[in-house]
Image (cartoon, rainbow, N blue to C red):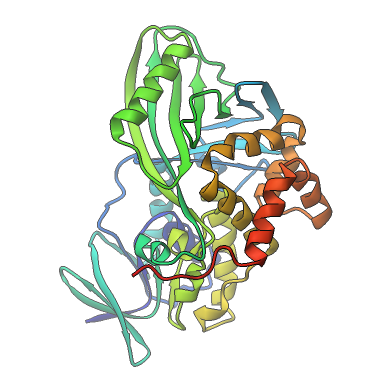
Length: 388
């Protein structure tokens, strides 16, 4: 058995970003680090989008950025001026290559293309079994998501952001490359929260995604039929599909961090790093990774890492509403974006607002819905209950 100071089970966004930050910090040169993942990270399997101010740490691999975005529903269309923010897009393969170029320069960091079969603890050591054998470590950071943990309780609702996207090339010059569609709710909702998401990279190329915030996945044909209908609605007569992507991201305020131990830390979606109310992950992971690097230099007990803030409670109320009345998602998001300050909304979603700024956003939302959700929480309409 080979021993490491740190092992990362899974090499997704959170693991790669944390190892990248460890490498750049220069604080872990005397620590042995192993990344384990069955995926070799050689394909462009996803696209990350996020908003931040200019000159971000990953700007070198941002393939497109925008200063404005469109929000739409059946009743209005609004071009959002992002003010001091930029909406940025990074392709998965560009991110993987960028990170691996850096971490493979460090002889104390290894990557093994192997599946993690089991994890156990004994005598202050963590044991990780793969097909080729067993590794041990002092500290394990696990990003392999297991939906069973969240689904085995009823105290916190569990929704999903699930989507299929097509990157298409058209014969016509149909897109405005300076204006992405952030959310377009002017499509049939069918009892859910459903919207289209369009990221144009030129006048005749764009990524078009059909996205839902709901409990259950759809048959693949239903996503693709919705994309086809939307393409027709845009007036596109002829197009070629260049790439396809699909995904599902947990949206829940379930307290994943209660599963942390002194020596095992759950990170990424497995640790509740995904923004529960939106499913956005990239910016949250930048912030969480930075905090984790600081923590590792001063603390030894992973149970101390997580800190709950006011935004966790805000997200919980929204998810309670969408869990009980999923068809109201369009109305809630529309109420925020119809007259709200877009830059302030994005600052709020980034969890950087003061309480006074929070109120400016919250008061734009349907008040009765959120008051009822709060009262239901106070009077325990959503009790802790284990599914047998």
